[in-house]
Length: 614
Image (cartoon, rainbow, N blue to C red; front, side, top):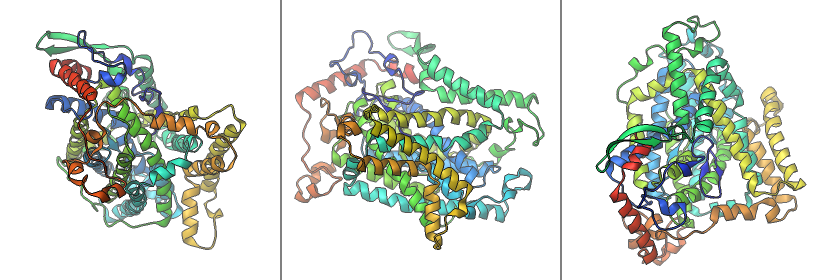
């Protein structure tokens, strides 16, 4: 999901990080040198905090990504005909947690090497749902009736696994494009032609195109959905600057209370949990109807039966667990549209993450390696069968500004924690018992923020220009009109070649592709200056240099001292994803800053624990 890029580098994801500057202050007498927020970091990107601090902060990052990660398999379950199969839904949730953790470790250790977490992406969700909505993959009518579904029957298993297999194959083939673009260095060429007027409609239409899913889930009980939405809005917007006292302990102050901005850190999780609890109380008191034909039945917490009891304690996801993947050419083209959008937003996330973690701007070889590693992550996600890919999580980039801890060791801990969550089958089963109206209430906020985050990219373009107003308005409107008409008239596309018909059907029913396509063509063909188009401001915001706090080689060099070993080989300069200059020691100024930061961390780290420990 693409966040709104603030001038200070903080990803303002509305309910995640806005107002983070009030969350943490350096203790009195321990002020650090420098004027930038980066100089106030307690741990920089290459520092290694104590193990217990890594675990505590790692848990927070997992919880921050919680909403986005579980939302994807719950949405996909509708297209996969799994609405009434809670056990399989729990397996999908466990798989996406496992793969997200694995891809996070690969990205932090071998990829961009910044503290940036990987998880499922909504950019691949839209083309996936478009593929599954094709007539040949439409769910049989009997799968929509819970009384007719036998989740253990071979017929039902064949129905959903055949859809998952074609989704897996399409994602795997489409991700190869991202691997090639990243490791070959072509991402720089792509970014020359893509500006705010292409990105804004593309990202906005991701959120707008999912309105049906949000309305369908929320419509199962609008009261519960409205309560969930109101709680999330209350916590994230109205109570975000109100601290809550929590008892803490330190060697110097012993037992005392510390104020924690809990509503700012976990508004989505708190809103879902409280609404979930209310639904449970209404279920045990039989306030909610027990008849499946009555309105409000789907708000009960016991309709999934004994899915928690039937779920295994331990499960180990593995490649091909749903069968041998198959490939659909139409699906591949649709996935390519999502992959391109994912690459664009990830480049912006890398620069924001570098600013917040006290690292220099990422060099080209690091960006190439990061994009290539994300492509590899999508390949693994397809092989494992998450039904989705992976991308950098903007919410977790913003969390760095809250905790003031930019160490990549913390994200490595998050990766291991997500792998553990994927291995424990009961955890995924618990999430499947969340009532659909609660999920719908969360979607109302989440998808709205995604749509607004796309529009926020227009801040770089001159929106007083009639040229830009036309391009954005036309791209947005056609991105809504054309897919809607194709959905209602799927037989209108008849070229006489079945494969071409399927490709066009998937592409033209994917709103983000239609809007992004028109935005790209019009922005690059209608005459306009770079300043008018927003290219100059866009490049400045994403490539602006900063004071070097740590040597680039120390942050972005290959792991296990491979950079030093390979630097003497002249051919390394021709490999786009490898640093070809010899690593150097930190400058005296940078070393002084690092020493000050590390010394401050050694003196007192209890304030960090207080800021995230519950």
